[in-house]
Image (cartoon, rainbow, N blue to C red; front, top):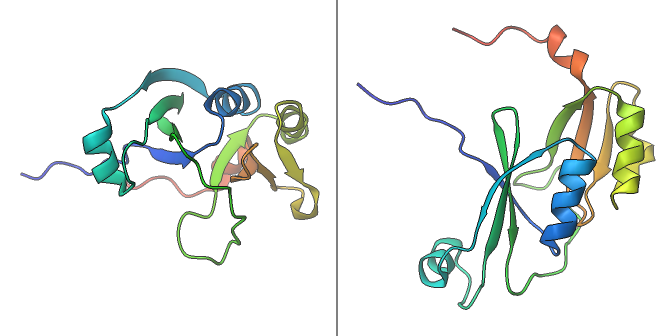
Length: 148
């Protein structure tokens, strides 16, 4: 018997972990779960960075989704990515009220990408530039059911 595969979490590197935590909790409704400072040697090897890296990780939850905010001793400046570049392009979050969420995004140091507003969805950026798609909670009502 094989065990099911489970998405554990999605990690986002940030330049200021306290600011990022305030943003994701205050603007998007994530809830704090726990944080840790893992030892340098295995962590540096795992993420292929030269030690010392002095990692601080904060884990936030939204339902069963877990977001890991990562801060390292040195953080490279964020390079804005385009949607057609390989790799993770964006996070997508369903919210109760898109306009109110956009106001909170601005209040907590993020940016609303006004040119992307299509009525049903809009893109915003966290304080470090990570792209996040906002969709209404009702969006899921029109999707096919998950297979059993």
